[in-house]
Length: 77
Image (cartoon, rainbow, N blue to C red; front, top):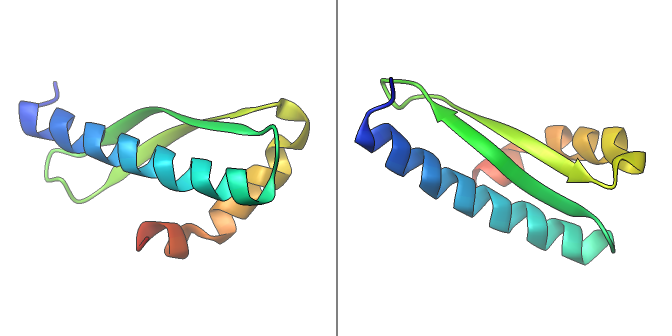
C-alpha cells in the first residue's frame, strides 16, 4: 500500500515527466500524444517506474527507443 508521501511524489513526477515529454513531442513530432498513465514509487523513495502511453501506435517503437536513449537528459531536465 502506498503512503501519502509516495502518492504525492508520484503525482509530481507524473506531471513533470508528462510536461517534458509533451514539449519534446511538440518540437519534433506533430500529431503525437505521449501521456504518463501511472507512476509507482518505491517505499524508500529511491526509484520510480513510469508507465507511458504513446498515440498513434504506428511509430511507437521508434518514439519509445528515443525516450529510452535520452533517459539521462530527461532525468536531469
